[in-house]
Length: 177
Image 1 (cartoon, rainbow, N blue to C red):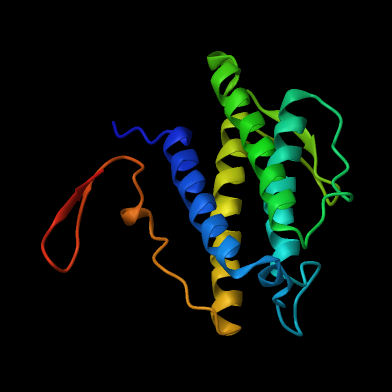
Image 2 (cartoon, rainbow, N blue to C red):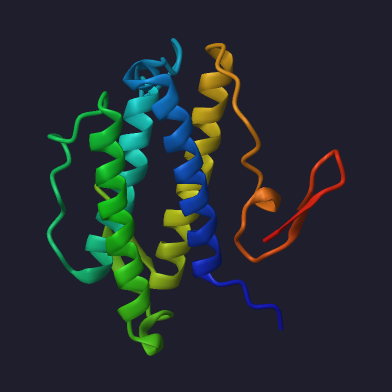
């Protein structure tokens, strides 16, 4: 049986975050003000969406751990260093949760209040959702930035070091992963 681990997805999203952070740092804080466009919903800028990614991760872990929800309104959406520091903190809490959660509880459904609905899901599904949610929103951010004239680079899972592999560049040299 094939066994994909949430750790594999965490490795991918950590790589993705680092690439986005490094690129955004080169652009400066103003890149966080890039607009989602006239038809955006509650996330009008890149900074709003980055903050949402990290806030959602933090709150899902808090729900799964039975803790009170953190008020993230004071986290600025226009300060790259503050945003990504918050992201590092939220990821550390997720790692701790994954490493310490009892193995026999991963598939035991829990009720979670998500503000818009109350759902009953397993911790396994919630953690998987956290990681897929992030991946989806990074893709949105990539599209927003491209439409605003910012060129990016590859973010495909195949090019990240998670789960190993070898990447050959056009000149034929290889990079072990």
